[in-house]
Image 1 (cartoon, one colour):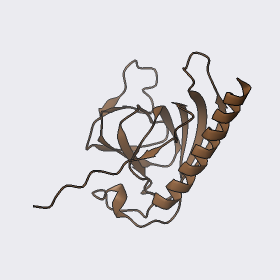
Image 2: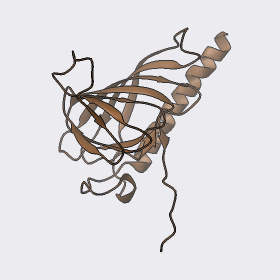
Image 3: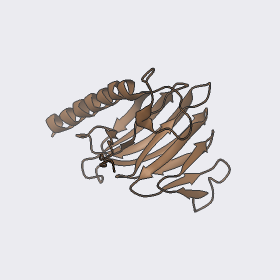
Length: 180
């Protein structure tokens, strides 16, 4: 059993490293709010750091991680999904967050932490600005992306429950449609 846990940890490390490298390859310049994640020019990368990780006994082999992510000013992350659940909270900066398809994302605004319901649901095609103290809960299969259109870094804290054998973020490439 020790071998499989070590293997999972190594795969989780490699997946996180690949995500950081992929984010660097896909990270982009600020673009008008109407631009998509695929339309901009690469510049800087978001840095995602695993602060602590464990394998809960009742989580069917999934890894539970606490992450700190820094999204530099001007970076637009690629459209992506996650292979599990991610709950993210904004520490600083403003993240422009867009749900592309695959479901809705609950958004909890600063000051509404004690309420049983999220402040709002963000559906496909919708965009919002997440400010310090705001949070989102992303579920598997929801295609989304974030952009730091501001001048200061965005710092996010995330709790994630993922399959450690899969990358933490899976790039989404929309299907091409024929031109009329």
